[in-house]
Length: 595
Image (cartoon, rainbow, N blue to C red; front, side):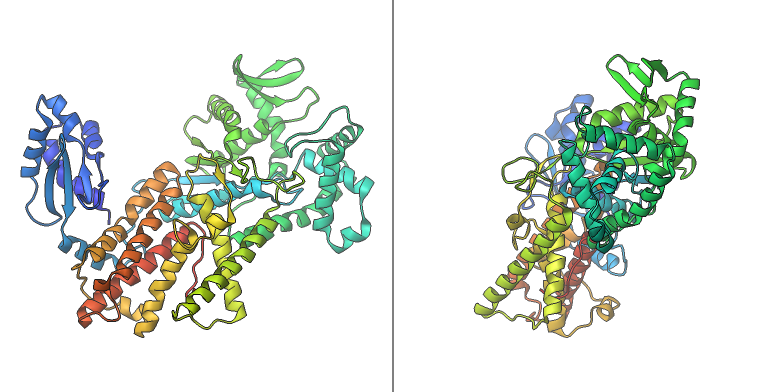
């Protein structure tokens, strides 16, 4: 059920009489959009002015002509001329009520599937597993999982591949640390924590300023751990044995976070998986003439300003080499039509060069897209870190979100009790579950509700707010709908099977109905732009419409003037709860039945 598509189907034959070119016709139909002022219009057609120019007419006259040709009954209740040629459209209440009745029995709530499904590999999170995940991994992991779920729901075959950093310099650092600074007792008790300590220690000793920085090359520690890396790559038995010993503990540390965040991958093919393929990548690039030698190294040069190194002068390979091997594997093994890289904006230049090189190498037909995103900032508008200047570990951030989520919930619960509201009796375990759902949901939603390409300031206070565009607000809206059914003593699943008619007698009922029927529009926009914030914006509109409905004295559910009206309003509550739950699940955010 897509209201815009329904409107476009009505306008298509009217415009087709005036526009012969199909691409131009689609462009004009694309100018039918949601109305900017809901009091005046549900939707607005904005094509009269540009079309009038091509037809040598005045736009108000053309708009009036088109309005006169619209069907007089069915979908559109009214069409009015506004301004210099805009057409304001109001949908009929009867149509909206019928549409709601149609989607009630649909688990997808009227959401369509993509007309041309594709096989999509989505690459996200991608941590270096030699160290714990920190806040810098948050956005890729959360945005990637949301897009994974959205694209799959839309009907695409999605392969989620976590391209792990499980090879290279970071393991050279661990090997050096293990051999020179190991606390054996600590390692035997908790290998994950001890390996994390060793990584931080060696990075500090090497004076590396960031995880990407390999440190001062004149520093003997840097020289030592680089040598350990070379030995690992050359197949040194001891270093390979230790690498295999480290990997389970390193992976478990990462997987703990993924389980907490409800993040799932189909594959975790890391750098080590592609390492045996890299010599062939370089040889093939040389054979095809897209790579050449330069001062002992091998490079792919598109022009003087765009040069990618694929083999260093010392024989070591680079990220570009591994990424080319990855593209080759995803095309030839997964048969991918599209590959999405959910990676921060700082890698933009790398991906631009990589995609150009891949197409020149022999892969021109696969869509390669860098789904970039901005940074998470602290209150000082700088990348968020601890007081010591280290990135905040993700586990610590999530623990704090849950702790504050519990504090917020308990304070809100006490306030409602003092004001005389009915508050459910909950066990400590139930309250802790709410705290986890609220806390983790707040972290995710605060990220996903931002425009993906923008930076945002991380604030527990704002993300845990019970009003405004937050996860908590939407989770509470869901719980409120569920509580209405409990108070009505009506079982939802049984109720959903009953064919109760929908009555839209009050403006708040109609406004809520309209938002519920816009689900498909939000999903299509989110997919087209790889923009989860299109879904959070939609949820915000649904929950606001529910709040207005719930607050209106004319829209009482439990005290409705008739059973028919009560059941109609229960239909609205049921569809609202199901819509909120569906969209939050696409964002990997849970709900609770009571709050």
